[in-house]
Image (cartoon, rainbow, N blue to C red):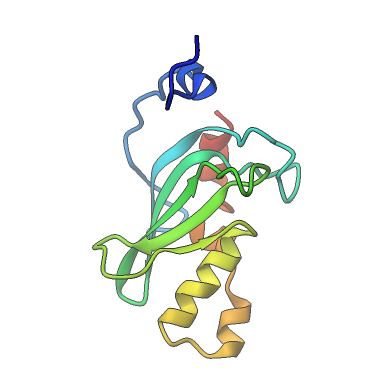
Length: 143
């Protein structure tokens, strides 16, 4: 029978391999903590064929003198086709900025909270801030 509160699909996933945090030499401001464990259930959510947004992805990025956690988390029942992009200060002293649209949308919310001008906010490249444009990160995410 069905056990309340247990998600069989989640239960069936293999355990994530142990990943040692890696400083990415292409950009010393970014540390990759986890390349993620799996693609969202509807893996059609990709901005291009060259880039995946794996659930469980976690990087740390320096911005405005603080370290920021850049996460891609499992979608909710309201948004089953896309992951959630969440950015918050590593020390916990910020509200989590979330988006189901894109990493850039989440980072624009961070920039707004940090007092950036409207012009600078629209120039933010969240994919780059997540570290997802770096060659080494893309290699690790594909593995």
